[in-house]
Structures are given as structure tokens and as C-alpha cells.
Length: 63
Image (cartoon, rainbow, N blue to C red; front, side, top):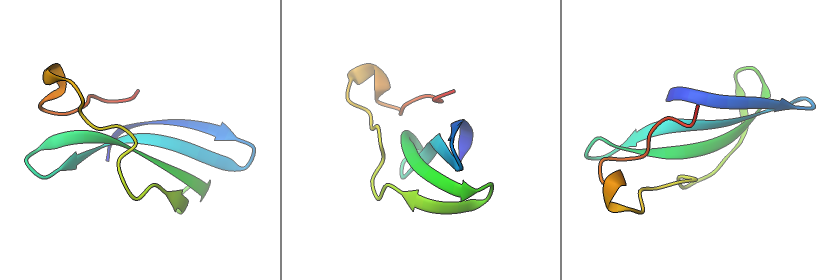
């Protein structure tokens, strides 16, 4: 995980993070933490993936 962007909503911490997939291409993932280090929910697939030619090497940090 690289340079996550987080926001606290009530007792939950919502986090978008940059993760590296095969071929060194980055994607953006999303998860929810119910304690500082306990993931309570995480998407099975990336939240954002490269869609345009200028993103061919991946998506940059969400922060």
C-alpha cells in the first residue's frame, strides 16, 4: 500500500490506497477499518483501474 487517503466517518476509517498489481501497474483500492489496524470491509477488485492511454503504467496516488 502506498500513500493512502483516509477519512474518519463516525467510528469507521475509510481508506483509498494505491496498490501495485502484476507488471508493476498501480490501481486504487478501497477498504473500511473499524479500528486503526482492523480491516472490516475491502473490495475484492480495485476501485479504479487504468482506463486511458496516459494511465498505461497505472494510476497515481489518491492523496
